[in-house]
Amino acid sequence: MRRRELIALLGASMLPWTLAAKAQPRRKIAMADKGATIAYADGTGSFLVLLALAEQEALFQKYGVDDVRSVGIKGATAPRLTADMPLGMIGEPAALLQATEGADLRLVASFSDIKLSGHLVARPGINTPTDLRGKRMGARVIGAGLWISTILALERLGLDPRRDQINILPVGNPVQIFRALEQGEIDAALVSAGQSRELQAKGFAVLLKDYPPDISSFGGGLVVSNGFLSSNPDVVENVVHALLEALAMCLGGRNKAKVMQAFNKALSITDAETAASSLAELRRKPYPSLAPLAKMQAVISIHDPRVLKVSPADLIDDQFVRKFDENGELDALYAAYA
Image 1 (cartoon, rainbow, N blue to C red):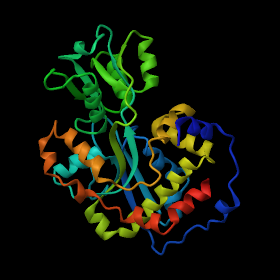
Image 2 (image 1 turned 60 degrees about the vertical axis):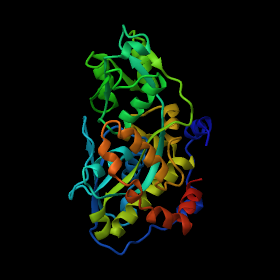
Image 3 (image 1 turned 180 degrees about the horizontal axis):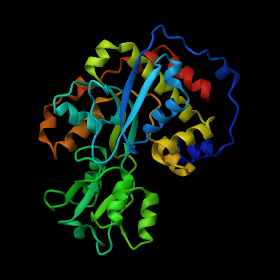
């Protein structure tokens, strides 16, 4: 779907649910008191709107997962799956890094394909790409999603962090990165177009803002510890089901107010244009895919060569997305919200 079509959909008046959507019975799940804790990186990734929307609309409870707790991980720390937090809505690079450290994880759904975007902005006095040599840049976590986007943006400028002695520091979420740049704690960073406009008004320079449309930076999805998956496949299946319904609500076009409420909660997004850009990153059929994981792995290896020992194929488990796709449930969800 084109970006302007998404904007039109988000800007449309709130329409009543169709009779077909109302007729969808709430599914009864034959399990009691099952729940899970889902970790996520606070304020990072368009796919987080799905988690916020599923919580907001009680979709986890609809599918029988009565006790779902989401835990936002703040600052320059990647969410780590543990026995107490066995699921994560996280960037796929973070999953690869955890697998490098020995975590036994499975990527069960890949909800977003995040393209290289935003503006590479530098403090006053840095006016050309060559001025970045020897300077400090900010990212959330070294080796994870925003770091990958920063590496790719530097490549577009003909720069190499090692060769040009550019130090990329772990700073935190996009708001913290913006503040660090504004306060002079770092010299440059990849920021959103809205943040860029604020910084330009204060004399900051934009070194890069135009990218080819097909450069993917990283994906984000639902990751689960293999131990929890083996012991609780019904819980994981129904968490996936709830997130798929949230995906259908986001892309269906009939839920402007609810979707915007979720965007505000998850990502502090309040305008339709920015929301449309985020919706354009969501994937209608969120199968985990080997090729994007392999590309992310290659970039991460610049920072941590150990990641090359991980087999991306071993991380993928698409059984639940495939089930709901092949049995027609995914299409039915889209039809209910179309």
